[in-house]
Length: 297
Ligand code: ADP
Ligand code: MG
Image (cartoon, rainbow, N blue to C red; front, side, top):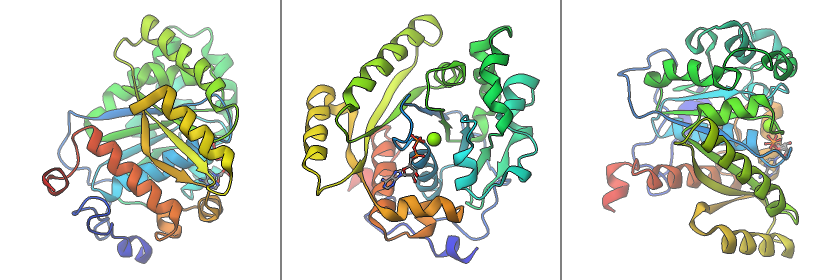
């Protein structure tokens, strides 16, 4: 636990009171909050930073004393693996929640990060898309389960698979808002148009309250001119929806999952970890949830 105890969010860099506390337990959830925010991390493209953002934004929010749940909705289970939860440890999973009526509470597992829990994904989730197809209220399975869990957390982050299938649809129907990681590459905006159209359809058909939480530019390489151009283009088209914070391409971010750790734990000082801390700060500030010291500063 020493690495977790050592992790302190530097003053002024994030929330002044942000810390992981000693021996934080995922079980001492504390008083129920009615202001849980459910965010779906979605982009039908693979490899754009959905899982990386889910894991590291969740960690940064937990470091700021928020109670966070990750729901791993990708059959590849990368969020689960990236948090050190091997396949053998995944007794109950999102598959059981979606198809067997298991509650989120029963399927939730602690992570090594205080205040942060996960519902892991297992390989049988890869068949869930088809299995869900002839279930009643197939689009609302996750929403129903999450509604019961809202009182336990400040944030629930859903890590979506790289397609617009029934699993992603369940996430969009369950979520309050969508957070879109967008890789700084030539075709970035093209895929985004498709995603935005899907979000509009979901709003009309299933979830009128669904909004766009924000778009976060990922894997930004400052030595690559194209990245600058894409970032400028995306900002011009989408304005304030795009977070100020840009996640740089950083080798520590890509190394961390193989150690079963978020980059904030693997190398707190890396540019990647610092960027995710800034992103969490921006997310909280936009929601008016920044600590008092921040708001009055
Ligand atoms: P997705 O969930 O959208 O498929 P991932 O988060 O799994 O994408 O990222 C794809 C790959 O890129 C992973 O190997 C991850 O470690 C790596 N990666 C993600 N973000 C960064 C970054 N900012 N810098 C370097 N590597 C990154
Ligand atoms: Mg992923």
